[in-house]
Image (cartoon, rainbow, N blue to C red):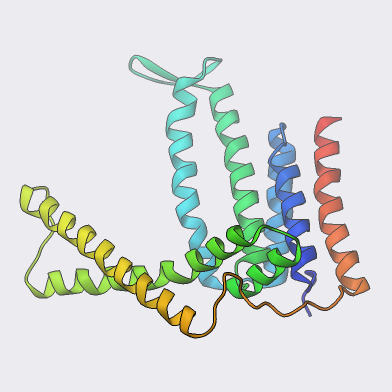
Length: 238
């Protein structure tokens, strides 16, 4: 039994409130405490292993922060490397940003990472989000995977022709051809999809069914999640 609200409308609102509140933290200790709490929530919810792997991309960005900020923010030096020095204030700033970024991404991954795009689109439409925004979101999520699969097929075809990437003109020209061909095939696929949707009677709106009313448990779970995030923000400002 999951502890998350089952109603996607309330889950989306609670996620938005929680991310907005936790992204405003100013104290490193509070941000680290929030990160630990969200990690426990993710473990309790049992999110899939592939979703954990997505966090590695974010942690690469976080690593860049630790390589740059300590050497660019003035303060008490803690490490001297030739003409440059790392400051304690820079390390603290990098740690605060790293905690807030990790909390936000992990929260989004835990609450929304395993939800199908079509269900998210229906929930957004029920929350009165403009139809063009919902349509753009659903189609973008749906066809990113198709375009990625097309890119992998083109790359496999290049490797079958003995292509080996390197730092030379031939490699960059080959990747230019790859991107150009990918754009052409994506446009061709988009035209076919548009024609197929028109043949099925598409008239500018996705036919989402009306969602059932949220249960009392959904209201309690979403209010508890958003309330904890707001309470953490208030504790940080005291």
